[in-house]
Image 1 (cartoon, rainbow, N blue to C red):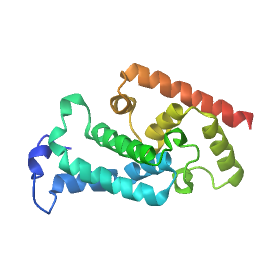
Image 2 (cartoon, rainbow, N blue to C red):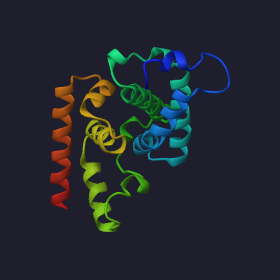
Image 3 (cartoon, rainbow, N blue to C red):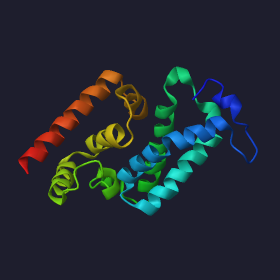
Length: 174
């Protein structure tokens, strides 16, 4: 997002500016994949993803480049919206135990491998699954993940490394 993002998108009005449209087009697929990986419900993921961009448009003036990248800001909004939805459903313990099929499409189209990855993800702690989702579904950098989860970059990197190591070990155990 350019520095003029907050000023470029008017507070009121019906048409978002080019800056917000570009942000939406550039990030929508990853925001949706991340939200879908948390909610495990495509219909709810569509609704929550729409809510994410609505909140981002309304809160665009709260974006502060000094506090992190636009992607970290947006995924922070996405995380909060998805967790709100999980709380609303009283399903907070159900964070990403099984990724949607389209979220693992980059893996070989091999049912056995997908089943192994799903079982390995289910064996992870919900916070570890969230880190995996932020890194591989959302495509965030460690610095951006740190901003989203409210940790230092080194702590986020260490937690992510541990989660990936556990995931690999669980995959090899199956």
